[in-house]
Structures are given as C-alpha cells and as structure tokens.
Image: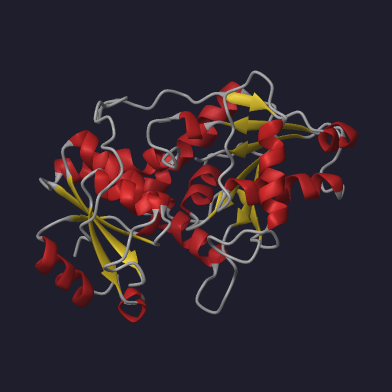
Length: 319
C-alpha cells in the first residue's frame, strides 16, 4: 500500500530523548503585541514545538506518542498502526517515533487522492522515516474503528499496536496533562490556558490538570458539521482517560478559516507578521492548520475585551 517514489533526504535517526525517560520541560516566551498592551493582558507562549525541532510538526505529539510507544513495547508489539489525514502531523511524528525507537509504522491515510500520485511533503517525510502508507477510501474510513476494518488492516500489515487518529487515546490524553503541570510550575500566575483543537486530545488532557479558578480555551481548527462534534469528543476523551469531565474548558468554533487544512490570505499575512516581529527569540513558525488560527482567535478576543485587565494567558504552541 506504500507509494514508491523518491523521498526527501533521509533524516537524522539519532534520538534526542530515550523511550524510558521523561521529556524535558519546554520554554515559555512572552509575546509582545500592541493589542495585548492596550488590553492590559499578558500572553505567554508554551513552546512545545521545541521538544524536537528535528521533526517539524511533532512537538506536543511526543507527549501522546511516548506513553503509547512504551505500552506497545511492554505488550510485545513491534509495529505501530495509526490513522490520519493527508496533511496529518501525527502521521509524520508517529513515523519518527518508530524510527527512533525501532518500531515498524503503518499510516492509514484518509482518502485515496494521493494513491499512485506524488506525496505531499508531510507524507513524503513519513515515508522517509520508514512508514508504510495505506490509503483508505472515505466510506471505509468512517468504519475504521470497527472490528471488520481493523481485522482487514491486521491481515494486510500483521499484528500491530493501534493508535487512533491524533494519538488521542487514554494514554495520549494523560500525557497531555503534563503540559499544564509544567506550565503551572513555570508560571503559576497563568489564568487561562489556550490551545488549538483537532481531535480534542490536547484540550482534554491539559484541562484535567487545571488548578481551581483556572480555565482552558480551545480554538477549533476544523469546521463543525453533522459528523463532527469536538465538544462531545473532548468530553468523551476525558471520560475515557479520567472517568469524568475534568476542569473548566470551552471550545471556540469561530476561527477555523474554512476548515481543516484551509487558510486565507488574511491568516497567512497574520502568521508572517508575527514571525517578522520577533527579536532575538527562538524562531516562531506558526502552523497555518492549527496554531496560527488559535493565536489569531486569541488576539481577536483580546481586542474584543473578552479578558479582564491583568489577565495572564498562555497558548500552547504544539508544533
């Protein structure tokens, strides 16, 4: 099911962290912006994108992948099988994890548009890390969690530890709770912790670690629809990981810019403007699928007076 073509140059396989070691805390960076100054609000960026700069787009994905890779090893598996869209950061990060820790990887891709066609950069990088790509038609995709479809996948690829889309299972969600724990130890004054929302796993985890009086705000990167209810999915992930809904959290659905993978000239100009205003800090390359939308929405809310003066915000830059 893999598309054979010339991949990008093979990446450096040297691990930056070991499978049995915790991740090092990621740094905070204060964003200086006139809108924040006028509103009397501080905004700290939690730079999870710096967890592993060698794998662009991985970042917070490692918080989900490491506990699952450990579980796979403990259960005797040598293969990770997971799911994602054609532009999924999760597929690329899973492929990198497999390469780092000696696990085979299979990526089931939503849609058959790229079957027997040139891969986009993200899928090409996943293939370069050794991931076998299996393109699934969209009708079957909706049934991907059913026993019949999973059995067919195992017949094609052999026994495997199965990870859901985005790595958002109970272990992955609990792994994301460490973001809040780290952040609160670094900046206990933070009032609102914000993140982009794709599958709901990140928000579900970080909200579970909130202190009393602290709240979480998610910005949907996907356009809502009949088959997509991010609020319900996030709540379900919290029940799966922690047994009940945890923390005070809310998802704002107004800043998806047309849906997953969609962008506009306005969003692109905004992201470029943020990058241009940096001075002496680690480069901030906002991903247009996720963090650019979240930061745009957050600053718009600041301008609209959604936060009282003296509020300290934090935004997770997941990478």
